Image (cartoon, rainbow, N blue to C red; front, top):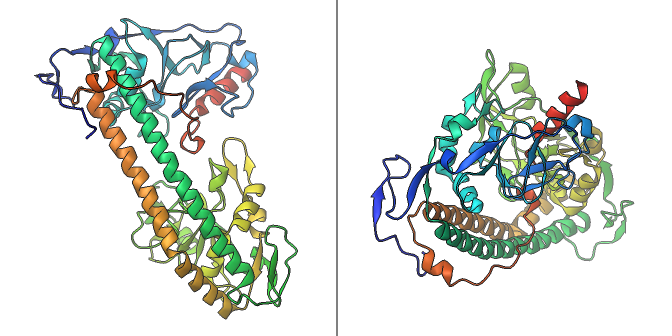
Length: 477
């Protein structure tokens, strides 16, 4: 626990299952007594379009990477003013709220609120993003489906009656001050961990690249490879396209269960740091597939999976080596499966070469897209590879695995530490905004927090798919 933080001296019961008690000097209010929905629409569409993102909040739509939308397609979009709060009704349970810092327009499917009583909106944002509130928002949302597909919405008549803890305004500001300070300290620590991961990854990449291009003999004669990303390779080795050493199968098995199909376990995502090996300890998704799909996309030991599309170009072409197999274990639709030709390439060697920086940069340059990036089958199949004799490949793969073992362990340890830091941060936020911990004395003594660094764009996915949908409908009309 942070030094100086203590429970409040007197707690009173709230009668709420998710929040048994709050400090005696706090109130419990319904949201509708704090926020009032406003619904003002544009008649011209000339105002600036704003996009709501998970980390950055409410930002310019084009500045966030959205496509330019003509004004006539924005007619009837909702107006928002500085100091108002906006809720994405379809993703309220994901904590997708933001505070306007400038005038502009937001999706017609959003809800815009002004303050009914004076409150620190940043306090409310922290409260609304809590897991406990997310569960309530999900339960109060109405519509069809599970909500992940966008059919559930949290309407104001269900949002407004929800009770929330409401401290005095000066204490709200102290809570925000404390959480801003703690967030800055947490962010600094996480950035240091990420820099360490970056340095470790560079070291790992250097080991991989040298081994797959120059082998294990430091005195081996070298020759130009003909590829500027690969550089020199061992004389006597050959260069081949991926299509010549492995069969590529692009999966169409989605992460749903379809009536009449067989139950399968789906591998649908590859994380290069955590899932270098698709093994028995990895969690798989429950889905279904036809007998033909199971036959074609069932994983076998020695296969290599590769990410063919992602929302982040840096996740394109990420490989994983399959180390387990079962009759019901199949490749999912975000991945392509590479099945090495046994007389051409060893699966482990292929995996390490695809993980090397030459292949990663080649795929990054080939990726195309705006909000989602993808690799064409042709780009994957055309990747140039270094091909030593098969026995040499196996020796190199074993060497890389051993030489990078400690580095990979250190990377995973750092990632686990980041996860623990974030979990502690989330737990602390929940305890502070619900009054389980008293931060007043600590917050009052804190220095001003310097402006934080921009949010990590890899963690800040665009959440405004509906903007383009509404704009398209308006334009067609």
